[in-house]
Image 1 (spheres, each protein chain N blue to C red):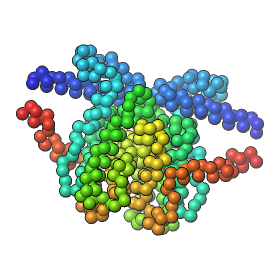
Image 2: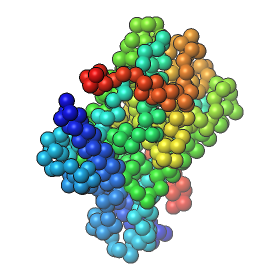
Image 3: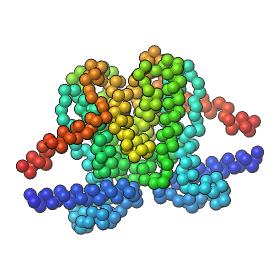
Length: 221
Length: 221
Protein backbone atom coordinates (compact mmCIF):
# COMPACT_ATOMS: atom_id res chain seq x y z
CA UNK A 1 0.00 0.00 0.00
CA UNK A 2 2.86 2.36 0.87
CA UNK A 3 4.56 1.43 -2.39
CA UNK A 4 1.36 2.07 -4.31
CA UNK A 5 0.98 5.49 -2.67
CA UNK A 6 4.48 6.43 -3.73
CA UNK A 7 3.74 5.31 -7.28
CA UNK A 8 0.61 7.48 -7.32
CA UNK A 9 2.63 10.45 -6.03
CA UNK A 10 5.39 9.92 -8.61
CA UNK A 11 2.80 9.75 -11.39
CA UNK A 12 1.28 13.02 -10.13
CA UNK A 13 4.72 14.69 -9.93
CA UNK A 14 5.42 13.70 -13.53
CA UNK A 15 2.02 14.95 -14.72
CA UNK A 16 2.50 18.32 -12.98
CA UNK A 17 5.91 18.70 -14.62
CA UNK A 18 4.50 17.70 -18.01
CA UNK A 19 1.64 20.20 -17.64
CA UNK A 20 4.14 22.96 -16.86
CA UNK A 21 6.41 22.17 -19.79
CA UNK A 22 3.53 21.77 -22.29
CA UNK A 23 2.09 25.11 -21.09
CA UNK A 24 5.37 26.93 -21.60
CA UNK A 25 6.57 25.31 -24.81
CA UNK A 26 3.52 23.88 -26.56
CA UNK A 27 3.26 20.20 -27.49
CA UNK A 28 5.53 20.36 -30.51
CA UNK A 29 8.50 22.06 -28.81
CA UNK A 30 8.27 20.21 -25.48
CA UNK A 31 10.76 17.36 -24.96
CA UNK A 32 10.68 14.37 -22.64
CA UNK A 33 14.10 15.29 -21.21
CA UNK A 34 12.78 18.74 -20.25
CA UNK A 35 9.84 17.09 -18.47
CA UNK A 36 12.26 14.68 -16.81
CA UNK A 37 14.40 17.57 -15.50
CA UNK A 38 11.37 19.49 -14.25
CA UNK A 39 9.90 16.43 -12.50
CA UNK A 40 13.19 15.36 -10.91
CA UNK A 41 12.34 11.66 -11.17
CA UNK A 42 14.34 8.83 -12.75
CA UNK A 43 14.08 8.11 -16.45
CA UNK A 44 12.87 4.61 -15.55
CA UNK A 45 10.02 5.97 -13.42
CA UNK A 46 8.91 8.34 -16.15
CA UNK A 47 8.91 5.70 -18.90
CA UNK A 48 7.16 3.23 -16.58
CA UNK A 49 4.20 5.60 -16.21
CA UNK A 50 4.30 7.27 -19.64
CA UNK A 51 6.11 5.49 -22.48
CA UNK A 52 5.91 8.46 -24.91
CA UNK A 53 5.36 12.21 -25.19
CA UNK A 54 1.84 11.54 -26.47
CA UNK A 55 1.13 9.42 -23.35
CA UNK A 56 2.29 12.33 -21.19
CA UNK A 57 -0.01 14.71 -23.06
CA UNK A 58 -2.96 12.32 -22.85
CA UNK A 59 -2.28 11.98 -19.11
CA UNK A 60 -2.47 15.74 -18.66
CA UNK A 61 -5.60 15.99 -20.84
CA UNK A 62 -7.23 13.19 -18.82
CA UNK A 63 -6.79 15.09 -15.52
CA UNK A 64 -9.75 17.34 -16.39
CA UNK A 65 -12.10 14.32 -16.15
CA UNK A 66 -11.34 13.71 -12.46
CA UNK A 67 -14.33 15.50 -10.89
CA UNK A 68 -17.02 13.91 -13.02
CA UNK A 69 -19.81 13.16 -12.21
CA UNK A 70 -20.96 16.11 -10.09
CA UNK A 71 -23.32 15.46 -7.13
CA UNK A 72 -26.93 14.50 -7.91
CA UNK A 73 -29.63 17.21 -8.03
CA UNK A 74 -33.37 17.29 -8.50
CA UNK A 75 -32.92 18.38 -12.11
CA UNK A 76 -30.49 16.85 -14.59
CA UNK A 77 -30.23 20.28 -16.20
CA UNK A 78 -28.81 21.55 -12.91
CA UNK A 79 -26.20 18.78 -13.00
CA UNK A 80 -25.38 19.78 -16.57
CA UNK A 81 -24.94 23.42 -15.52
CA UNK A 82 -22.89 22.32 -12.52
CA UNK A 83 -20.61 20.26 -14.77
CA UNK A 84 -20.00 23.29 -16.99
CA UNK A 85 -19.53 25.77 -14.13
CA UNK A 86 -17.25 23.41 -12.19
CA UNK A 87 -15.10 22.92 -15.27
CA UNK A 88 -14.88 26.71 -15.71
CA UNK A 89 -13.89 27.13 -12.06
CA UNK A 90 -11.24 24.40 -12.29
CA UNK A 91 -9.87 25.96 -15.48
CA UNK A 92 -9.51 29.26 -13.68
CA UNK A 93 -7.86 27.79 -10.59
CA UNK A 94 -6.02 24.56 -11.52
CA UNK A 95 -2.92 24.73 -13.75
CA UNK A 96 -3.26 21.05 -14.68
CA UNK A 97 -6.81 21.46 -16.01
CA UNK A 98 -5.73 24.55 -17.93
CA UNK A 99 -2.80 22.69 -19.49
CA UNK A 100 -5.08 19.82 -20.53
CA UNK A 101 -7.58 22.12 -22.21
CA UNK A 102 -4.81 24.02 -23.99
CA UNK A 103 -3.34 20.79 -25.32
CA UNK A 104 -6.78 19.82 -26.68
CA UNK A 105 -6.84 23.09 -28.61
CA UNK A 106 -3.18 23.14 -29.70
CA UNK A 107 -3.52 22.99 -33.47
CA UNK A 108 0.24 22.66 -33.87
CA UNK A 109 0.25 19.42 -31.86
CA UNK A 110 0.85 17.16 -34.86
CA UNK A 111 0.57 13.49 -34.00
CA UNK A 112 -1.49 14.12 -30.84
CA UNK A 113 -5.05 12.83 -31.05
CA UNK A 114 -7.01 15.82 -29.74
CA UNK A 115 -10.49 14.52 -30.49
CA UNK A 116 -10.54 12.55 -27.19
CA UNK A 117 -11.55 15.36 -24.80
CA UNK A 118 -14.23 16.62 -27.20
CA UNK A 119 -15.65 13.09 -27.48
CA UNK A 120 -15.42 12.64 -23.72
CA UNK A 121 -17.23 15.87 -22.82
CA UNK A 122 -19.84 15.32 -25.52
CA UNK A 123 -20.56 11.93 -23.98
CA UNK A 124 -20.79 13.33 -20.42
CA UNK A 125 -23.10 16.17 -21.50
CA UNK A 126 -25.05 13.91 -23.89
CA UNK A 127 -25.69 11.36 -21.11
CA UNK A 128 -27.03 14.10 -18.80
CA UNK A 129 -29.31 15.32 -21.60
CA UNK A 130 -30.55 11.77 -22.24
CA UNK A 131 -31.52 11.50 -18.57
CA UNK A 132 -33.06 14.98 -18.67
CA UNK A 133 -35.20 13.84 -21.61
CA UNK A 134 -36.49 10.84 -19.65
CA UNK A 135 -37.34 13.10 -16.71
CA UNK A 136 -39.28 15.47 -18.99
CA UNK A 137 -36.87 18.38 -18.59
CA UNK A 138 -36.15 18.90 -22.32
CA UNK A 139 -38.09 20.76 -24.97
CA UNK A 140 -39.63 18.21 -27.34
CA UNK A 141 -37.54 19.00 -30.46
CA UNK A 142 -34.12 18.80 -28.77
CA UNK A 143 -31.71 16.15 -30.07
CA UNK A 144 -29.43 15.42 -27.06
CA UNK A 145 -26.33 14.63 -29.14
CA UNK A 146 -26.69 17.84 -31.18
CA UNK A 147 -27.26 19.97 -28.08
CA UNK A 148 -24.23 18.31 -26.44
CA UNK A 149 -22.08 19.16 -29.48
CA UNK A 150 -23.21 22.79 -29.35
CA UNK A 151 -22.55 23.10 -25.61
CA UNK A 152 -19.14 21.43 -25.65
CA UNK A 153 -17.95 23.29 -28.75
CA UNK A 154 -19.24 26.63 -27.46
CA UNK A 155 -17.61 26.19 -24.09
CA UNK A 156 -14.25 25.46 -25.73
CA UNK A 157 -14.47 28.80 -27.54
CA UNK A 158 -15.77 30.81 -24.61
CA UNK A 159 -12.81 29.69 -22.52
CA UNK A 160 -10.36 30.39 -25.37
CA UNK A 161 -11.81 33.89 -25.78
CA UNK A 162 -11.57 34.54 -22.04
CA UNK A 163 -7.95 33.37 -22.07
CA UNK A 164 -7.03 35.54 -25.08
CA UNK A 165 -8.81 38.64 -23.79
CA UNK A 166 -7.96 38.62 -20.05
CA UNK A 167 -6.20 35.37 -19.07
CA UNK A 168 -9.40 33.74 -17.71
CA UNK A 169 -10.41 36.55 -15.34
CA UNK A 170 -13.94 36.78 -16.73
CA UNK A 171 -14.39 33.07 -17.46
CA UNK A 172 -17.08 32.41 -14.83
CA UNK A 173 -19.23 35.25 -16.08
CA UNK A 174 -18.78 34.13 -19.71
CA UNK A 175 -19.66 30.51 -18.85
CA UNK A 176 -22.76 31.68 -17.01
CA UNK A 177 -23.82 33.82 -20.02
CA UNK A 178 -23.34 30.88 -22.36
CA UNK A 179 -25.68 28.72 -20.27
CA UNK A 180 -28.26 31.51 -20.06
CA UNK A 181 -28.29 31.85 -23.85
CA UNK A 182 -28.23 28.16 -24.81
CA UNK A 183 -30.31 26.40 -22.12
CA UNK A 184 -33.58 28.21 -23.01
CA UNK A 185 -33.38 26.33 -26.35
CA UNK A 186 -32.87 23.06 -24.50
CA UNK A 187 -34.89 22.89 -21.28
CA UNK A 188 -38.56 23.55 -20.46
CA UNK A 189 -39.21 26.83 -18.69
CA UNK A 190 -40.39 25.29 -15.40
CA UNK A 191 -36.95 23.68 -15.09
CA UNK A 192 -35.15 26.88 -16.11
CA UNK A 193 -36.99 28.73 -13.36
CA UNK A 194 -35.50 26.38 -10.75
CA UNK A 195 -31.87 26.07 -11.81
CA UNK A 196 -28.92 28.09 -10.57
CA UNK A 197 -26.70 29.29 -13.42
CA UNK A 198 -24.84 31.96 -11.47
CA UNK A 199 -21.10 32.58 -11.52
CA UNK A 200 -20.39 31.24 -8.03
CA UNK A 201 -21.84 27.81 -8.77
CA UNK A 202 -18.52 26.18 -9.77
CA UNK A 203 -16.77 27.10 -6.54
CA UNK A 204 -19.73 25.84 -4.47
CA UNK A 205 -19.68 22.47 -6.22
CA UNK A 206 -15.89 22.20 -5.93
CA UNK A 207 -16.10 22.80 -2.17
CA UNK A 208 -18.89 20.26 -1.83
CA UNK A 209 -16.92 17.64 -3.77
CA UNK A 210 -13.76 18.11 -1.72
CA UNK A 211 -15.78 17.04 1.35
CA UNK A 212 -17.18 14.00 -0.44
CA UNK A 213 -15.31 10.68 0.06
CA UNK A 214 -13.58 9.73 -3.20
CA UNK A 215 -13.08 6.28 -4.72
CA UNK A 216 -9.39 6.56 -3.74
CA UNK A 217 -10.29 7.29 -0.07
CA UNK A 218 -12.57 4.27 -0.07
CA UNK A 219 -9.73 2.07 -1.40
CA UNK A 220 -7.35 3.33 1.33
CA UNK A 221 -9.97 2.93 4.05
CA UNK B 1 -1.40 52.46 -61.00
CA UNK B 2 0.56 49.53 -62.46
CA UNK B 3 3.14 49.99 -59.72
CA UNK B 4 0.41 50.03 -57.08
CA UNK B 5 -1.10 46.83 -58.50
CA UNK B 6 2.25 45.13 -58.24
CA UNK B 7 2.64 46.25 -54.65
CA UNK B 8 -0.79 44.84 -53.81
CA UNK B 9 0.15 41.55 -55.47
CA UNK B 10 3.48 41.38 -53.62
CA UNK B 11 1.72 42.02 -50.32
CA UNK B 12 -0.73 39.21 -51.10
CA UNK B 13 2.09 36.83 -52.05
CA UNK B 14 3.84 37.55 -48.75
CA UNK B 15 0.62 37.03 -46.76
CA UNK B 16 -0.09 33.70 -48.46
CA UNK B 17 3.45 32.54 -47.68
CA UNK B 18 3.14 33.73 -44.08
CA UNK B 19 -0.21 31.93 -43.69
CA UNK B 20 1.36 28.71 -44.97
CA UNK B 21 4.39 28.91 -42.68
CA UNK B 22 2.33 29.87 -39.59
CA UNK B 23 -0.05 26.96 -40.31
CA UNK B 24 2.78 24.45 -40.54
CA UNK B 25 5.03 25.66 -37.75
CA UNK B 26 2.89 27.70 -35.36
CA UNK B 27 3.66 31.33 -34.52
CA UNK B 28 6.48 30.60 -32.11
CA UNK B 29 8.52 28.33 -34.41
CA UNK B 30 7.92 30.26 -37.66
CA UNK B 31 10.77 32.50 -38.82
CA UNK B 32 10.81 35.49 -41.13
CA UNK B 33 13.51 33.88 -43.29
CA UNK B 34 11.28 30.83 -43.83
CA UNK B 35 8.44 33.12 -44.90
CA UNK B 36 10.87 34.99 -47.16
CA UNK B 37 11.95 31.73 -48.84
CA UNK B 38 8.36 30.57 -49.31
CA UNK B 39 7.22 33.92 -50.73
CA UNK B 40 10.20 34.28 -53.10
CA UNK B 41 10.26 38.08 -52.73
CA UNK B 42 13.17 40.33 -51.75
CA UNK B 43 13.94 41.00 -48.13
CA UNK B 44 13.37 44.71 -48.80
CA UNK B 45 9.87 44.08 -50.15
CA UNK B 46 8.95 41.94 -47.18
CA UNK B 47 10.17 44.43 -44.58
CA UNK B 48 8.52 47.30 -46.48
CA UNK B 49 5.10 45.66 -46.07
CA UNK B 50 5.65 43.91 -42.73
CA UNK B 51 8.44 45.18 -40.44
CA UNK B 52 8.15 42.25 -37.95
CA UNK B 53 6.86 38.72 -37.46
CA UNK B 54 3.99 40.11 -35.40
CA UNK B 55 3.05 42.41 -38.32
CA UNK B 56 2.98 39.39 -40.62
CA UNK B 57 0.73 37.51 -38.18
CA UNK B 58 -1.59 40.50 -37.76
CA UNK B 59 -1.74 40.79 -41.57
CA UNK B 60 -2.87 37.17 -41.86
CA UNK B 61 -5.36 37.57 -38.99
CA UNK B 62 -6.76 40.71 -40.64
CA UNK B 63 -7.55 38.86 -43.91
CA UNK B 64 -10.63 37.27 -42.30
CA UNK B 65 -12.24 40.75 -42.06
CA UNK B 66 -12.26 41.26 -45.83
CA UNK B 67 -15.85 40.21 -46.63
CA UNK B 68 -17.54 42.31 -43.94
CA UNK B 69 -20.21 43.68 -44.10
CA UNK B 70 -22.45 41.11 -45.81
CA UNK B 71 -25.23 42.33 -48.17
CA UNK B 72 -28.27 44.05 -46.59
CA UNK B 73 -31.39 42.01 -45.76
CA UNK B 74 -34.83 42.74 -44.40
CA UNK B 75 -33.80 41.48 -40.99
CA UNK B 76 -30.58 42.38 -39.19
CA UNK B 77 -30.71 38.92 -37.58
CA UNK B 78 -30.42 37.45 -41.09
CA UNK B 79 -27.33 39.60 -41.69
CA UNK B 80 -25.92 38.33 -38.40
CA UNK B 81 -26.56 34.71 -39.41
CA UNK B 82 -25.09 35.42 -42.85
CA UNK B 83 -21.94 36.86 -41.25
CA UNK B 84 -21.50 33.71 -39.15
CA UNK B 85 -22.29 31.26 -41.97
CA UNK B 86 -20.07 33.11 -44.47
CA UNK B 87 -17.20 33.03 -41.99
CA UNK B 88 -17.71 29.28 -41.52
CA UNK B 89 -17.74 28.75 -45.28
CA UNK B 90 -14.57 30.81 -45.74
CA UNK B 91 -12.86 28.90 -42.93
CA UNK B 92 -13.68 25.66 -44.68
CA UNK B 93 -12.52 26.82 -48.11
CA UNK B 94 -9.85 29.53 -47.72
CA UNK B 95 -6.42 28.62 -46.27
CA UNK B 96 -5.72 32.27 -45.39
CA UNK B 97 -8.85 32.62 -43.25
CA UNK B 98 -8.07 29.31 -41.57
CA UNK B 99 -4.51 30.44 -40.79
CA UNK B 100 -5.78 33.71 -39.31
CA UNK B 101 -8.26 31.98 -37.04
CA UNK B 102 -5.64 29.47 -35.91
CA UNK B 103 -3.23 32.27 -35.05
CA UNK B 104 -5.94 33.93 -32.93
CA UNK B 105 -6.28 30.69 -30.97
CA UNK B 106 -2.57 29.82 -30.77
CA UNK B 107 -1.95 29.95 -27.03
CA UNK B 108 1.78 29.41 -27.53
CA UNK B 109 2.03 32.63 -29.57
CA UNK B 110 3.80 34.62 -26.86
CA UNK B 111 4.13 38.29 -27.73
CA UNK B 112 1.30 38.21 -30.29
CA UNK B 113 -1.74 40.25 -29.28
CA UNK B 114 -4.56 37.80 -30.02
CA UNK B 115 -7.38 39.82 -28.50
CA UNK B 116 -7.78 41.84 -31.74
CA UNK B 117 -9.90 39.39 -33.76
CA UNK B 118 -12.15 38.67 -30.77
CA UNK B 119 -12.67 42.42 -30.25
CA UNK B 120 -13.23 42.92 -33.97
CA UNK B 121 -15.88 40.19 -34.34
CA UNK B 122 -17.58 41.22 -31.12
CA UNK B 123 -17.87 44.72 -32.54
CA UNK B 124 -19.24 43.51 -35.90
CA UNK B 125 -21.80 41.22 -34.23
CA UNK B 126 -22.59 43.78 -31.52
CA UNK B 127 -23.29 46.49 -34.13
CA UNK B 128 -25.70 44.17 -35.99
CA UNK B 129 -27.47 43.41 -32.70
CA UNK B 130 -27.70 47.13 -31.88
CA UNK B 131 -29.43 47.71 -35.21
CA UNK B 132 -31.62 44.64 -34.66
CA UNK B 133 -32.69 46.14 -31.34
CA UNK B 134 -33.73 49.42 -33.02
CA UNK B 135 -35.73 47.49 -35.61
CA UNK B 136 -37.54 45.54 -32.86
CA UNK B 137 -36.00 42.19 -33.75
CA UNK B 138 -34.57 41.42 -30.29
CA UNK B 139 -36.18 39.96 -27.20
CA UNK B 140 -36.52 42.72 -24.59
CA UNK B 141 -33.97 41.41 -22.05
CA UNK B 142 -31.10 40.89 -24.51
CA UNK B 143 -27.92 42.91 -23.88
CA UNK B 144 -26.32 43.20 -27.36
CA UNK B 145 -22.72 43.23 -26.08
CA UNK B 146 -23.28 40.12 -23.95
CA UNK B 147 -25.04 38.26 -26.75
CA UNK B 148 -22.18 39.25 -29.10
CA UNK B 149 -19.61 37.86 -26.64
CA UNK B 150 -21.52 34.58 -26.40
CA UNK B 151 -21.85 34.23 -30.18
CA UNK B 152 -18.24 35.10 -30.99
CA UNK B 153 -16.79 32.93 -28.21
CA UNK B 154 -19.06 30.01 -29.07
CA UNK B 155 -18.20 30.17 -32.74
CA UNK B 156 -14.48 30.09 -31.95
CA UNK B 157 -14.99 26.83 -30.06
CA UNK B 158 -17.36 25.24 -32.54
CA UNK B 159 -14.80 25.74 -35.31
CA UNK B 160 -11.97 24.44 -33.09
CA UNK B 161 -14.01 21.33 -32.26
CA UNK B 162 -14.82 20.76 -35.93
CA UNK B 163 -11.12 21.09 -36.78
CA UNK B 164 -10.02 18.68 -34.02
CA UNK B 165 -12.69 16.10 -34.78
CA UNK B 166 -12.77 16.02 -38.60
CA UNK B 167 -10.62 18.82 -40.06
CA UNK B 168 -13.60 21.18 -40.67
CA UNK B 169 -15.73 18.72 -42.67
CA UNK B 170 -18.80 19.23 -40.47
CA UNK B 171 -18.23 22.93 -39.75
CA UNK B 172 -21.26 24.23 -41.69
CA UNK B 173 -23.64 21.90 -39.90
CA UNK B 174 -22.11 22.80 -36.50
CA UNK B 175 -22.34 26.54 -37.24
CA UNK B 176 -25.97 26.15 -38.26
CA UNK B 177 -26.72 24.21 -35.02
CA UNK B 178 -25.08 26.91 -32.95
CA UNK B 179 -27.31 29.58 -34.48
CA UNK B 180 -30.42 27.44 -34.01
CA UNK B 181 -29.63 27.01 -30.30
CA UNK B 182 -28.53 30.58 -29.49
CA UNK B 183 -30.75 32.82 -31.66
CA UNK B 184 -34.03 31.76 -29.97
CA UNK B 185 -32.63 33.46 -26.83
CA UNK B 186 -31.86 36.57 -28.84
CA UNK B 187 -34.50 37.28 -31.49
CA UNK B 188 -38.31 37.46 -31.41
CA UNK B 189 -40.07 34.46 -32.89
CA UNK B 190 -41.62 36.31 -35.84
CA UNK B 191 -38.09 37.13 -36.99
CA UNK B 192 -36.83 33.58 -36.35
CA UNK B 193 -39.64 32.26 -38.53
CA UNK B 194 -38.33 34.29 -41.47
CA UNK B 195 -34.59 33.77 -41.33
CA UNK B 196 -32.53 31.18 -43.17
CA UNK B 197 -30.02 29.44 -40.88
CA UNK B 198 -29.30 26.47 -43.14
CA UNK B 199 -25.88 25.04 -43.94
CA UNK B 200 -25.74 26.27 -47.54
CA UNK B 201 -26.18 29.92 -46.58
CA UNK B 202 -22.45 30.76 -46.44
CA UNK B 203 -21.76 29.56 -49.95
CA UNK B 204 -24.76 31.48 -51.30
CA UNK B 205 -23.56 34.72 -49.71
CA UNK B 206 -19.98 34.16 -50.89
CA UNK B 207 -21.21 33.71 -54.49
CA UNK B 208 -23.36 36.82 -54.23
CA UNK B 209 -20.48 38.90 -52.90
CA UNK B 210 -18.09 37.79 -55.63
CA UNK B 211 -20.51 39.35 -58.15
CA UNK B 212 -20.72 42.60 -56.22
CA UNK B 213 -18.34 45.41 -57.24
CA UNK B 214 -15.69 45.84 -54.55
CA UNK B 215 -13.99 49.02 -53.36
CA UNK B 216 -10.81 47.82 -55.14
CA UNK B 217 -12.70 47.39 -58.45
CA UNK B 218 -14.10 50.89 -58.08
CA UNK B 219 -10.58 52.30 -57.56
CA UNK B 220 -9.23 50.49 -60.67
CA UNK B 221 -12.24 51.50 -62.78
